[in-house]
Length: 275
Picture 1 (tube, rainbow, N blue to C red):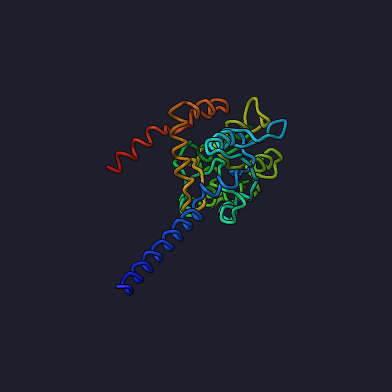
Picture 2 (cartoon, rainbow, N blue to C red; picture 1 turned 90 degrees about the horizontal axis):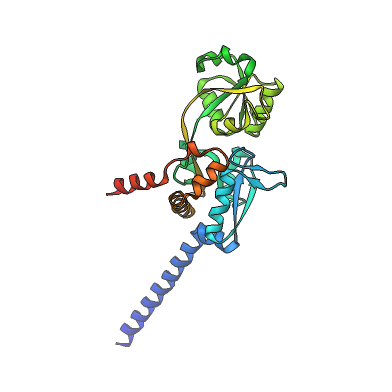
């Protein structure tokens, strides 16, 4: 009887230790717990108006920046912004130098396979930027053959031009791509339509440039480390902020309200699909 009792006690101790180990493992794998413990959500960005850019005092503002700050506040932590090399965004996540990539990121296969992504929140397209003086010479994507394009390294714009087989020069940011065209060192650029709406044409810093042909249609999402529970936390935040009007209010501040994706409709679709 003593041997049986000893065996039972040993088994219970083993289960208890195993349970504690599993709990500890779960805690270690929780990005949400990790971010809350360190007290800061570090957001990986590039300078990309109207999503992430600096005001006159050096503060990061923009639709994505403001939403990221609001999300961090909902978690009870501070927000920090870290400029990254866009081509190395996955490496930055995995090294934990950042916690999230939130910078008008296109949800393509490459991104969704490498990251844990949020629901889509904005519609976008890759659009061709040309000098206004030659705009009328180009009406279709086929007309663009022979031009040299400036594209951000690792971007959706680069993917589109590469797929077309056109010549391109990689630069560090989309803002650099605009500078290339303005300076005449590249014939054209491909950047996000939302950025083009804010950066080129009448009343902007690039009045001599225009956005012309859209090469695709796409959606923006936010990326976390693969398996991160922060993605679901953000989806919940998106739904709540859309329902109470916060997302729309921030979007109107930066003129991107027409591009917003209805988070309530997304949630309803997901619920219907699960039934």
